[in-house]
Image (cartoon, rainbow, N blue to C red; front, side, top):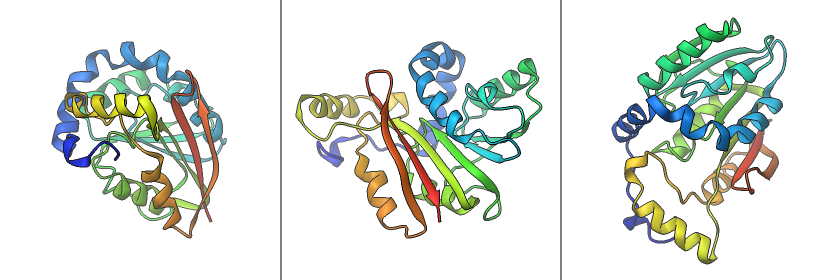
Length: 218
């Protein structure tokens, strides 16, 4: 990361789990509106009646009701308190297409190879301590011809915004995610994977703060 990696707090799984246990009671209130366009973009691209979709970092399940009822869903997250709220949402909305929710480490997904037609991970890569391992696991469990759909804030590459993000990153450890997340983390990884192709990359609302990326497994 720009701004000096040694100055940026390093996330670990225990830290992230504790952070999201704190966020769980008011996560929906804080993030429903600002993350809505990103979730909408991911769901629109993933909706395929009859498909099986893995939602990595499902959190409180905000996007689950947005899916077509014919799309079968499995959600995993490291945070049990967040998953309890997702389970409550599934019951309240009678989401019969949600096949299961479970506590799981995204860097060690407990599914066989090529288990899912689509893997979605909205607002997730910036919170996982080992993004390359998580991305590799997503690529492992998606079928050939399937897609991985991501949306995250991608940090500015230079100028005043990059300086502000670098400062925020050094003071954001308790949030449970990195503010300053360069595209190169994802782009460089894609370049090492001949089995993956970047199909789409675009900025989305609000104010282009977030980047939607669609990867195809060849």
